Length: 307
Ligand SMILES: [Zn+2]
Image (cartoon, rainbow, N blue to C red):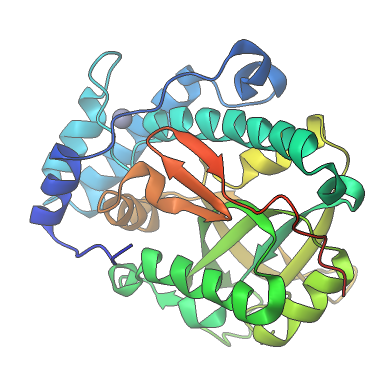
């Protein structure tokens, strides 16, 4: 996959030849029914209109995008990566496909499920960008780079479903050690490797510093039911956060808070995401996307990667 060039022409091309919205997942695989607090379409409408408002105030020259967000409606969806309503449809589709994938693995390669599934979050410092410079971050190149890294690190045969997330991080400790910046990162669901194998392969590549306290989180997914649904839906989360770092009065230690992104950063991120198709945030390994179907490409004799 080529890195997508930026600019209005690219946006138009992407939309004209672009991917339409996905079909609905069947009832029994619809995250909207499986997860009680999954965003409603009413909620995404509120987010969509407030994104349009932030654009109006902070990036008034982005009037076309603003108009698309304001006029996105049933039967005439805008399909912009900046649109929370359209993103919700892709998120619903994605979880349905993840459940399909799990069933297929269970039927064809049940040995891969003898080790737990893991939810892995990866933060690579090199992807950080100062406020106002998110446009210099190449999302598709980052996905490609980290997919290669998995292979080089000896994790070639694992199955991964995931996506890119963005946070806007601020040093609110009063120590003024770093400037506010964008922190693109990945949320992945990994099947077919032990925790030890994942840690051993990945930890050397993602280094902590003052801005990134924990560059690698590996958390066990509890079973293949509700927790799998929750963790796979998190891969394409629809709300982006502002994360101030502060020092707890009681603990004296550094902690992170989480707020929904608003104002100027919200406008900047919307303008950035509009350059991409809705599926460009996906991170897949040993899975191919054919239109709106995800297909497992793993060899049936693949074994669990144990470190
Ligand atoms: Zn839309």
